[in-house]
Image 1 (cartoon, rainbow, N blue to C red):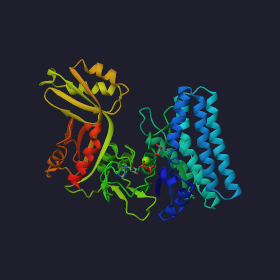
Image 2: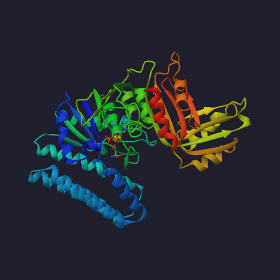
Image 3: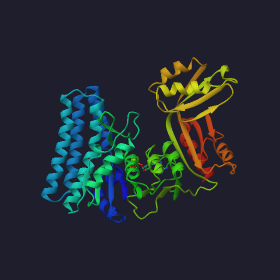
Image 4: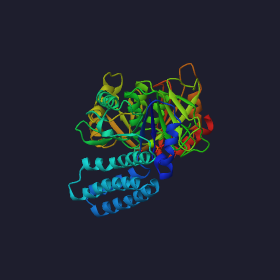
Length: 439
Ligand code: ADP
Ligand code: ASP
Ligand code: MG
């Protein structure tokens, strides 16, 4: 069994959507599970619509709903040729857009917001299913809301998903082609929820993991995982092979090609992930598995924006034990993850990317000493083989950034990551300078 996920641009136009089946067919497997994102731009529009409903600006929200509806009318008219296909498509979009417009009549809360955000994947998957039907290709449309679930900590509920999806697959044991929605799920209250922006990768990885698929394929608009952010640096190149740990670090630290958490399920169940390009289906792409080719080398660089650094300076830290535990407990109470940390004898600096509880956190940390907060920073993450037998990598990195005001450096946390924290306005310069020096 293979899980194939197609991103927003891969389903971004009727012409693109029509090409998917030939890619699916070319991947030998007994069963294919297709995970689709929303048509590109749709989730952004839905976010705007929900924002305006939340603000109470119903008129603007409805205008935006109508504008999006018009785009889908064109999409339907270009995707289908038969009367039945055109009817299926038209009825489908009428149903979803009536729901979006109807939300103007009721109380609009964050529950409704998440229902709005779910419409993009519900539309794209049903459109593709009807398109296959028009081509006389049989497929099963599986509602992700029936089996994708988060627990009370917003973590995937593996047990539930394994039993639910396993049961569904048994029910359709003679079928071979399945289509489902990326990104959307239910939370532990049973409400419609999602896996955060870019979450379709995470869906594919979770499905591949719980069904122990032979492979998870992420089909996107670039020929694999590049050694640096192609949006900021020119001359980047696709990497043939990455280990799960290397890919996880890069995704977590900002490489947009993969959702930050999407490598963990695949790694947990040892299912290889292949990144492939819909426009160049024969290109090699990147294979993410247990093995790596980095062998003493630096393989890639990524950057994550919106980072806040917090320094706690305390003379009480000197020779004291238990100090860091008390600091960490503050972040734990607010469920705020810490990304980077560096310490000296009298101070500790750490970074967070979630600032909703920043004020409360700072207030509590002030009990321990002086607290400084620096916002608008970027973590630059350099990934490769940094086992202790290798040497010289830190020098290359520090040499490359000698003209940049570096706020923190973290090295030795894992065997494949060296991170530096720089002010956001120096991010691109840092990425380019490291790229020129390393590759
Ligand atoms: P999809 O809609 O298919 O999920 P995304 O836009 O989420 O696609 O991810 C693909 C994009 O990620 C690429 O077009 C590229 O601009 C960006 N990107 C950022 N960092 C990298 C990287 N290291 N390697 C490849 N692509 C990257
Ligand atoms: N449609 C969602 C988004 O735009 C999920 C995804 O594309 O992966 O974020
Ligand atoms: Mg994506």
